[in-house]
Length: 307
Ligand SMILES: Nc1ncnc2c1ncn2[C@@H]1O[C@H](COP(=O)(O)OP(=O)(O)OP(=O)(O)O)[C@@H](O)[C@H]1O
Ligand SMILES: [Mg+2]
Image 1 (cartoon, protein in one colour):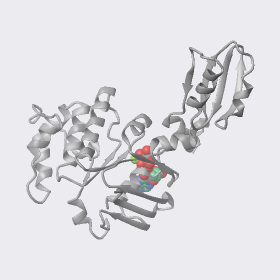
Image 2: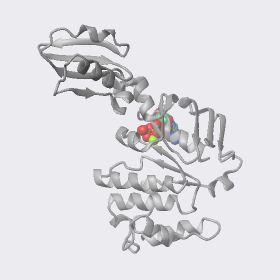
Image 3: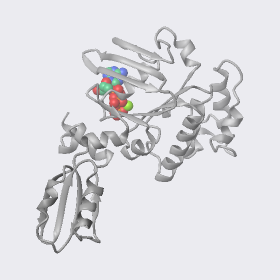
Image 4: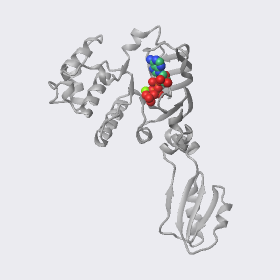
């Protein structure tokens, strides 16, 4: 069941004469971690702010849980959670005070002591925000975003500035929220994060979605050819080019490079073995999501800072 919880159609937003969002169309399914990636200034934050009803689009249609963020903002607020900007909390507020304060904005009872435990803040209840480590601050932000037990959670650059261990821990927490049935919208600049965490990913550039799919499908589609390298004493492997998946075979001394697509690795390996060639240094070079992102956004030519 792919129930759509967010639907965005032809979203457009301008700040004075500057177009922040040209034309964004996307949909998010219930229970998925949906990533949004794109270069600086691509329109990611503006898009998620419009989706949450924090900014008014100039045109386009948005539905979140069937609600119009402009007209139904009060009802929507009760059902979505949002990561705060770093500056949104006073430095001296204590962890328990922040949770208690945010819980007071939410109708009904909020079981925030359980969130303290769940998000690993036990023992830090009376610590002030400024005295938390970066990772603890992020966990507090997630706990605050979950205070109303929301169905959809928006996280914008959640792991920025975290050390690798804290990032990994945060990924675990985001998965845990997804496993509780929540839908997560995650804006990120980290392609490893997107590849590991996101069920689907939209790449936004110049205010448009340039592609949207699973990370692996994006890599397959745009990451460029795969490469296999190995060495052998055999001189002529041109016959490999007869395989549909093979685009090119090049040789430097005893080292061969085979480029191609699709099931290149198993088919070439099998063909080699069938002819009695069993290289012990066979290596696979596959495009990463980072390569894919750079190619897709045209930033692979080091021209990214020019625009
Ligand atoms: N309040 C604002 N007033 C005027 N222009 C704005 C405002 N907020 C954003 N912009 C501009 O709109 C464009 C999109 O900004 P946005 O913050 O959505 O980008 P982003 O994709 O989130 O970028 P980043 O990766 O740097 O966070 C940028 O060119 C930005 O300068
Ligand atoms: Mg942003």
